[in-house]
Length: 282
Ligand SMILES: NC(=O)c1ccc[n+]([C@@H]2O[C@H](COP(=O)([O-])OP(=O)(O)OC[C@H]3O[C@@H](n4cnc5c(N)ncnc54)[C@H](OP(=O)(O)O)[C@@H]3O)[C@@H](O)[C@H]2O)c1
Picture (spheres, rainbow, N blue to C red):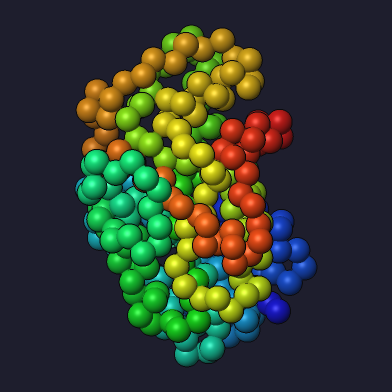
């Protein structure tokens, strides 16, 4: 089985390359442009993969509010081009999506299952939801994996992640104000890649939620980072309104991951254990 990983130098792509081992071809942004059908065709015909995993995305949640075309090109039309190209070649497509397809239900307090109606509150979330629909419509052999708050060790240190940002800020600050009203489950790309590597060996196509387990907020995550590392930083809880980011985020976007755990037999670790393991490495 030959697997092509698109976005192979990104956070998740780097861990997928490590976990998948020998049968894998990595495609960086220099190799493939998912918004261009010709570029996709050239790479698929060159490598003839059985499975394509798309981790490429426009991930700048705030900037997407002012650049909806760029977000939709990479997060909706790019995946559609990929889905069409994969379907035409009988290739399985694995596409990664986000908990930010939810958020309109501001009273939510229980984890979302795959059958729950989505309702994004940002351009980014809407563009990712469109990508999900287009992939499912165009490629019969497809997996969609929604995840949340990723942190990993990318080959190309592009935009970073929340954990690395906290470690960097701790070098200069002894107090940080962090949003405490967005409940979710930050997820290690190492754990996500392990679950995905098992899922794609099945033919149980469809939509899956996959995160670490448990619930926290960005404030809770920051406090845990400083506790585990012993860094002396006081974390002050603030509201999303206080922070004033351009894009709205869900107040609650915890995902129920029972389906993927039952199909793969993989148990996703608690977010605190995953974080401790990540911090032991960085
Ligand atoms: N990061 C999160 O917190 C988070 C949360 C939930 C879901 N997700 C989803 O999880 C997936 C993986 O996220 P990640 O954090 O691993 O992303 P990442 O680190 O930004 O990696 C994405 C990779 O894709 C490449 N890429 C971007 N646009 C491309 C395009 N149009 N054509 C080809 N390659 C392109 C990027 O290359 P360049 O950097 O060179 O452009 C980068 O190497 C994405 O689908 C994302 O939406 C992420």
